[in-house]
Image (cartoon, rainbow, N blue to C red; front, side, top):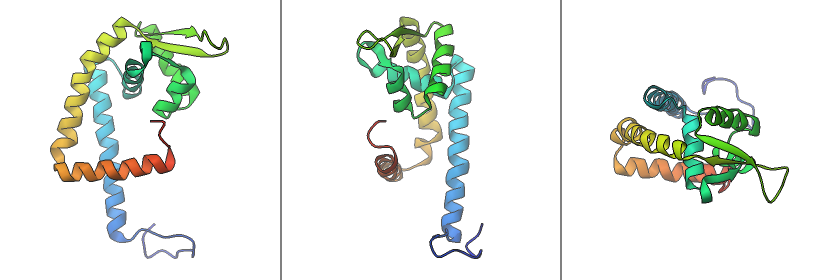
Length: 161
């Protein structure tokens, strides 16, 4: 829909410049995250969601998080995280155990093999972030991106990430 389309009074349509920037954002973010995912899959047999779960577990006490907490942190549904953790568990990178403090809860814990895979994959991931994003932005532009997305995160997702 363009800015010349009939708008209802409550809709603030994007002007042509805003629409162009929005489409650049959509296309750029899609190819950026797809490339990071391809790099991780090719080099380490990990998807971006798997990598992010390993990162979150590596940052937790005892490399362990409750599955519900993990789902909140990576902003995925509990069922999606359950399936992803199951793949990581089959690969020996994560184990699941009943929560000691609450028998209904399940914890995911990073294994030594998972930490080793994460250490290897981190070089690929950070290299990709640098090559595909940081090398295409000035320091000032990158700071603006950070400020904008921090506001969006606080507005939409709170401080859970």
